[in-house]
Length: 186
Image 1 (cartoon, rainbow, N blue to C red):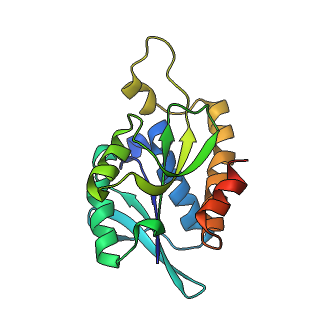
Image 2: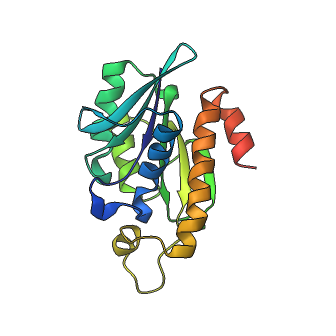
Image 3: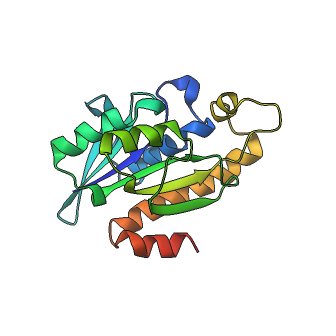
C-alpha cells in the first residue's frame, strides 16, 4: 500500500495559489485514475485506488499547510503504510518556477508543512517531490507570495509541471523511488 500526499490549504480562496501545488498534483492523479477524492479520515480528503493488486491512497490534508503531519501520520498508522511507501508533494521557494526535484530525505528548508511532517513522522527520511515556485520579489512578504496566485504565464507553465509530477507519481507505482529520481531529476 502506498500513500501520495499533496500539501496545501483547503478552501476555494487557496485554489491555484503557489502554496497549493501539492493539491493540484493530487487532483490531477485523482482525475487520471478516475477516483474522486470523496472520503475523509483524520482531517484529510482522500481516495483509494486499487491497481495491480496494490492499494494507493491520494490525500489532501485539510489541516492547513502548517499542520500537514497531523493528518498524514494517523493515516499512515491506520492503513499500516511504511515510511518508504509515502510520497509528499509540495512547493519550494528555493527552486525556480517549474523546476522539480525528487528526494528521499532532507531538512524542512524553512517549509512549515514539511516541518510538521518531520515532527509527526519523527524522521527526515521520506520520499518527496519539491516543486519550484521561486522566491518572492524584493519587498514582498513570503506569506503573501506563497498564498498568492500564479501569474497567467506561470500558471500555463505550472500545468505542464503538474502533469510531470503526476507522471513521476505514476512511475513510482511501478518502479523503486531511486529509479524515479534518476528519471525525473535528469
